[in-house]
Length: 489
Image 1: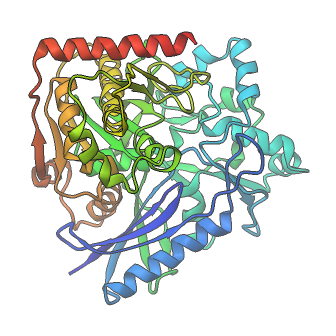
Image 2: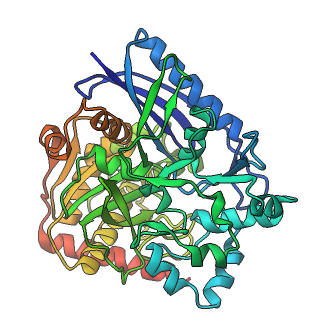
């Protein structure tokens, strides 16, 4: 039976997952990725660590499975992270600048003040924010000695993590990316499907540095890194790969991934929606040269709120204890946590806000605070969903959830209650890796196309709303007042 190797290179770890011909997990290997914080607000990865953790986990998972025949490789990756390397030697000129890095905030502010954001947003779907790759790349060219001159001579290459891995895996023969990763760089015109010369000129980025942009399911070269010759046939950024792994192929389908934060993508089909709520327009996936668009919203703090209960307050010893605490909370108390520890994401986009707790009484304790932490994720998801529906002007949505917090029945039931809509949790929990594997397997002729894959998607449990509509409205109104008070501080 042919197998598909999925490489999932994330922010805190690299994982390799081997899938069989029926899209079932055969083996998994994972290794943590060291983090570097050279200055306040700066986050970096060593490219050697990225490459080393990827190759080691891939070799490990192949060995675990008994070295089966591998038909193809799919890659999914942390998005927006920037690498620059020498075209001839492959040597990086600097550590990778991670998507979380904020060192270019001043540069982005200057560009906004100069009036460039509306046009950039119209072309790319993105906001002028350090989150995205373009300003990070400009910083490297400006601050690494000799980098700009070398780039202008054609000696340097730029890539997101997928491009770097493809280049390394193919021995420097292929410099490419896919449309979903290109769409996160701030340099790619998602309306025209090409790198934007005007934005590159504005940021003084030589276009010869940029990789070729391909479909998500395409030929990205052949690697001999794992024995024999294995084609790389699928690539997508992690959140888009999870959207595919959740089989969100129809307009109106929404996936939310709950990790440290939460990323929600709403499939809008052939329509690129211009957000009035400061959500992002992006490419959900691109097949056969045709992009499918999405609205994306980000919640900065989801699972991180539970980590705070454990590491910051010492209220729990493990994340799994949160559900039992929430279930024991006094239903007569109305404690609200606004987890703006690092600001508020969409639709607020307020980096200066900080966390707050409202409604405390002498009777409030660990149980009430734990419940408020879990509820905050549901409230923030409703904020995103309402913003998306206001932008798209459609009420229907099918929500599929994944990520660590999705395992909490209590949190998912509250999510359904506060949304007033069903929430579907999949049987297959490896949704991000599955999305990458499906792309490669489909291209290899092993896995079904979108319709067949959607038919095979299986729901492990559907959570249906069971909250009185009046109570739902009152509780959400209380949340909105709490956010407004937090923003005002």
